[in-house]
Length: 120
Image 1 (cartoon, rainbow, N blue to C red):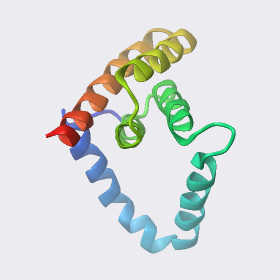
Image 2 (cartoon, rainbow, N blue to C red; image 1 turned 90 degrees about the horizontal axis):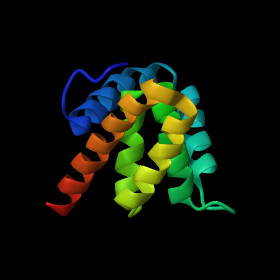
Image 3 (cartoon, rainbow, N blue to C red; image 1 turned 60 degrees about the horizontal axis):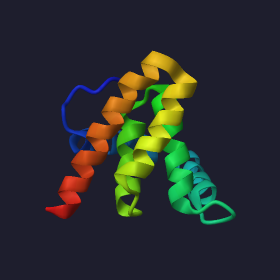
């Protein structure tokens, strides 16, 4: 899915709204997916922030704008720094080349947008 709007906040809200129908028609599947996400990102040997940084790198590699939005929003909530974001994106670009570089730019824009909203 490509970003149809310049706002990642609007994008994540729109996708969440579109998923409401799936939550109604497939409640057990959506519940299981939510539980999988909670289990995968829970603190363990790796803390939640580290796991969200990994998820962001995978979002960039998968070229998923909504995923980038959700994971940058979580990273802002978890107190990730811009330096942590930049290093994570550097690894994503190393592994994914030019296409990942383009999505890394989107990840920076998304992080900055959510950080500004949280600060303001």
